[in-house]
Every structure is written in C-alpha cells, then in structure tokens.
Image (cartoon, rainbow, N blue to C red):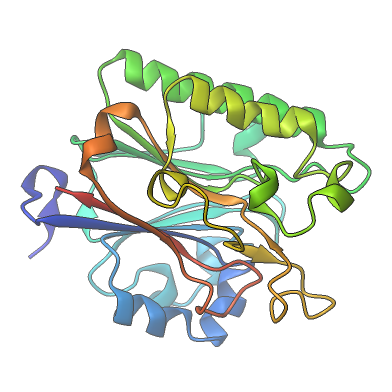
Length: 267
C-alpha cells in the first residue's frame, strides 16, 4: 500500500542527500543496492546527468518509491532527483525561473508537515565566470525559502551547495581562499542563511567536529588522505530544531566523489 504525506505515522523520518555525480555511473557501483539496504524515507540526489528516458525502470522508479526527476536540457549535465517512500502532497520541478530550471537544479516537495527542497547549486567555475549565476541562484533560492516560512511552513533544504562555510569545513582553507567554493562572497551567503535563522544541521549536532567532509577531488588520493570539503548540507527552518535527532556524514559510502549525508527528524 502506498502512503500519502498526510499518513505519516513513523516515529522517525530518515532523509538522505547525495551528489551521485552521474546516476547511471552510480548504478554500476551499487547505488540501488545501497538504496535497498539503507531504505531512506526521502532520498535527494544531485548531478544525475541523465534524462529519465535514459534510465532503466529499476533506476527510474525504484520499487516502493515515488520518483521525481528534474533534468537539464543539456544532456549529461546537472539534474536532480527525489525518491520518496511517502507520496508528497505536491511536487514542483524547479524554482519557476527559466534560467535555473533549464539546468535541472531544484525539486520542491510538499509533505504537509514540511516542505523539502532538493537543490544542486551552480559551480562558480575555475575562472569564476559562473560565480554571478551561482550568487543569483542562491539569492532567488533563499527568497523562495523565506516566502514559504512567511506562509507558516517548515522548510528543509538540502543538496550540494558547492560552498564550504567556514575554515573547519575544508582541509586546505588558506590554499583555497581564491577558489570558487570558498570565496568570501559565496561564504557570506551561508552567513546570511544562518543569520536568518536556518540551521546547518550537521553543525547543530557536531559544532566543532573537524575533518568532516562530503566531497574529495578524484586526484592526488584526496579521499584516502581525507583532503576534502564539506559542501553538502541539510538546513532546516528554526521551527524544526527540536525535532532533529541526528545529522551525519557517511564517508564510508563509495560510488561518487561525494558521499551521502543524512538527517533524522522526529515525526
């Protein structure tokens, strides 16, 4: 029997987010086995790099899950997906802003109890040419989150934000001061998010934990040496704070240059 969002009766809700860096490649590395074993209530994936019609049925709609895909017009680029055991009351693909939505960056799912937003934030580019686009997306994204809160809604947003917030959130902060992903303007947006009351759930539960990263470059044995960045997040609006049970990073899970992160909420 399929459940509706209004039928939530579980004691805990387990949410996961993972930039899979190509969902078809991840499938070949055991992604679906991990889904079956872990059984998230909601799983948000980013950088799917695929259109739904390019996927086999097992991946396009895993057994027991409602699946939603927002894909980029450009093949093999960007894209996000949502697998949900609970059927949302509604799902919106995109922010409603064409310049972002043509890149398949956002899914907004309304569960009644809260609104879950899965996002793949733009990369600023090595030459910083996409930093203005990234900052524009960030500004419009936050405005939509704030509008939802103004309507009295709880908000959970997650995904690859492509920004490390503080020096503790990457292994080589000094060497990356001029690199996209750690530019002052990019970090200042996360400051703004926090100042407006949103909570970085990992830091809520692990305020000063060091060497906790969610992305590692493929070169230089970065993952083996844990030379990484924490650029994947679960943020919540302040009204959900007392419901946070756990927030974790799972570096032991392979299959991408990112690892999954998780948030457990009391229902």
